[in-house]
Amino acid sequence: MRKCFLTGLLVLVPLAITAWVLNIIIGTLDQSLLFVPERWQPRTLVGFDIPGFGAILTILIVFVVGLLANNLIGNYVLRLWEKLLHRIPVVSSLYGSVKQVSDTLFSSSGNAFRKAVLIPYPHANSYTIGFLTGAPGGDVKNHLVGDYVSVYVPTTPNPTSGFFLMMARENVVELDMTVDAALKYIVSMGVVAPE
Image (tube, rainbow, N blue to C red; front, side):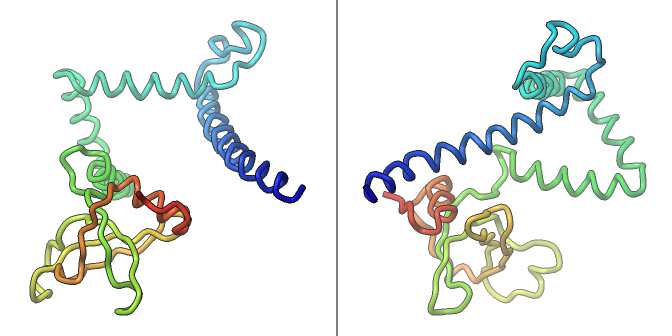
């Protein structure tokens, strides 16, 4: 009985957590309907709420904005909008920082999270997996003697928080592992080992 119960848990727990996370995401995206006029909302048009309609609407809006921003007129409007945002004192620093990080993370030409690496951390006799993010820049590189690289070390099980380290290149071992496999390994706390 115990074995059957544990097997049932192993099957149902990941399924339940996945359904729970998707429910939170879709519920959050459905909140975007609050910005849609009342007469255009599903409750008014068909008489009841449609779960996931806000998620579909959000995805559609993101796609249309991307489509418009990729043509000449949309690109011009986008540049004007950004110039306007850069003139507003508090908004300019916040928007500029978020834009720079998102451009780095989501750009196909960027170098964020391009390679999984093995580094000695938090001390010389223990190791962890990190991600190569580039090389130190600005005034920082003037104070580092030798060849250094920038490494992001995510925390487990939440890889969105972590540590940014600048390490000597000789202490960083590039792994023959995809970024996805390394993230699964980190999030699973080492349980799901890459092949």
